[in-house]
Amino acid sequence: MVADIMSTVGLVPRFEIFAANVPNAAAVIEGQQRLIVYSESWIQNTADNNRWAAIALLGHEIAHHLNGHTLEAGGSRPPTELEADRFAGFVVGKLGGNLQEAQWLFNRLPRHGSETHPPRSARLEAVAVGWRDATGGSMNTPPAPETSQDSPSPAPSDTLVGDWFVVAGSFPHSSTSEANARLAQLRQSGLNVNLVDTDDYAQFTNGLLSVVVASDSRRRAFEELEKVKRHVPDAYVKKGN
Image (tube, rainbow, N blue to C red; front, side, top):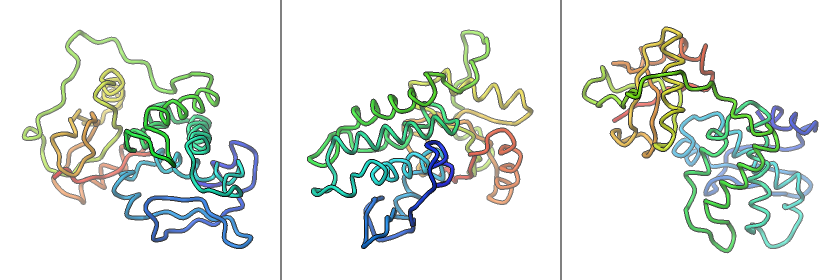
């Protein structure tokens, strides 16, 4: 993944990456070695096995090295964080992610800023600018098919079979059209997908509409995952409650 990120700017990776006892992730220099360290627990609880979130996170930390932030005294500062956020959006765009995928992780960061980090709104804007620089503004998502005014609504949790899900895409509540476009695309491919509201499930991140295949066991969910990944390479399995 690091090699993919570095390929967007034509450079060879010169970093060591490993899990460590840190709050989330950080770019540091120890001696002459550039390091990127991350909390495995934070990744699992925040990124939900989301490949684009991982790319955005690593892109952000790599930018601190590439931009020379780790050579400056004083640690994190809002201006340097925004530079790193912009690069995160850029690499997601260059590697084929859409704007929502670029911003997914940043939508889960604190709303208010601090002495070291900018507010969420500023970070989302920086990501959007970087993503636009990479793509020229192309949304990289299939257009919404023509539908009747009655678009599919999220399926009530008690109507789905099982509590294991293959997640084939998640979208903010405000992006119903994109969620329905993904739903229609996968149904046309023969997949038995449904739309769910993540607010109905204790182990999902709230505030999203997710396109899922429901299964009655973990084993069957992973069997379904192989089918879904033919169409959505970043699909993953998650338990709902």
